[in-house]
Image 1: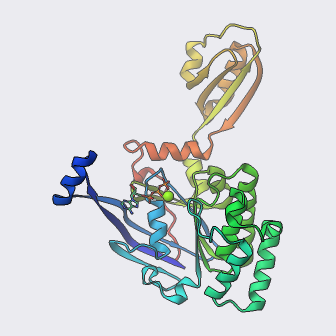
Image 2: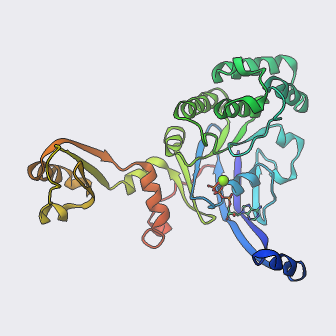
Image 3: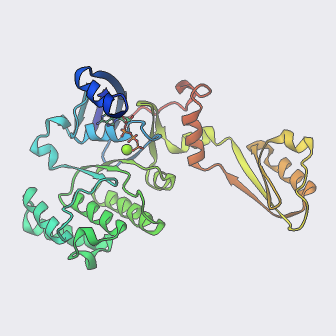
Length: 342
Ligand SMILES: Nc1ncnc2c1ncn2[C@@H]1O[C@H](COP(=O)(O)OP(=O)(O)OP(=O)(O)O)[C@@H](O)[C@H]1O
Ligand SMILES: [Mg+2]
């Protein structure tokens, strides 16, 4: 459904010296700087897939999504979405995709949601019966019936986001781009949005590309992830494989009995792993998986323990490590990307 071949985007920005003098000077002599936001990205996404796009701030996620949604034109490379070249913006293309951006309100601020939806019905020329049915269904699962007649500007962030989702899906798109759909929402609203996305996927089997800085979103929604670093796609494959390869350690936390001095750790224990924290309340160490039993026993023996907890590294930590270990983890070290079926 989505095919991308060596897609790149470079932005040219005019540099300006700071201050008023700089502004005047730049009127005469403009220095240009080229920012390579996306570098030769290739991928393909099939029907029914929810693919997570992960990367640090400024990595190029939004830029990639905007190209695929046809909002900006790439500087090189090719892409087709449902057989269309997105940036040509054919009507047929626009009728079959949706772009939802958590950072940016797309609905008409001063209208109640119900009126926004009516306008969209006209824009997409949706047949009355189909419109009613979709609206009913979406309103029901998103739980926003009560808010339909309230001006968008008066809704809470979570309610507004649900309306944005509803609006974007009214025309039953076959490809959905979600750029930080849960940003700024409380945990309950985040969960509601995630559950909705999963339910929508079951019903409609669209191809979905999702970005989020919340690892909970990625973990619950996506089996497959794309990791992008400085515009370059450095991993395309299953989330499980990344975790297996990189979550090589576990964390052991010992909660200490109160009113004891902060304990020293023996050299033997320190040799087993890295001490992440040691204070009056707890001692936390990270050790290779194989050493967990030995380290736990040793910790219990040496420390006045009240409780002991063993945790897997969470996916956020793992991804952070992959992203930051530029030198230590060359792309070839990453688990082999699964060949994506086209
Ligand atoms: N219109 C533009 N003009 C110039 N530079 C731009 C433009 N849009 C994006 N960039 C630059 O391209 C890079 C990638 O930006 P992009 O918004 O795609 O990042 P992102 O991965 O979505 O980050 P975030 O997680 O913060 O949303 C950044 O360095 C950004 O400053
Ligand atoms: Mg972004």
